[in-house]
Length: 191
Image (cartoon, rainbow, N blue to C red):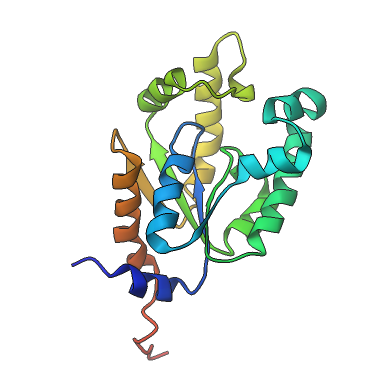
């Protein structure tokens, strides 16, 4: 039987949930219903970055390159990690900066793992500008990113493999899997 959300929320103790995964994996579309079900706030880190920089992510990449973008991303993540009871949709590359892992692990890191073909299908249907895919061969660029990032994503606390499930179903699945990560505070350890 699934644990009740109020009980799960109590066991989380205000720890934020950080959704990681490739662009197009559904971090934002899954994060919103997940936050709603938990009674948590929802933060789209990319939207906060754009707000903080006063321009779009493609413009940041154009002006400051990927390294400039990553520096802003780490600053924003640091600010977000000072808060609690949030579901945070991170940018796909947040895992590439080792400094970010300390911030991410202040909460629970959840990898939304979508296979390559499904990602390509989603990205083709999405109108969002993706600076790292603006290459002559976007599929090869995606493959290179997948090869680089998969081992990093695998360091998440929880991996959720997604095929074509809608975001609401993915959010419900996360709620069912979360208790396995949390020690029950009512159970005393014998250590």
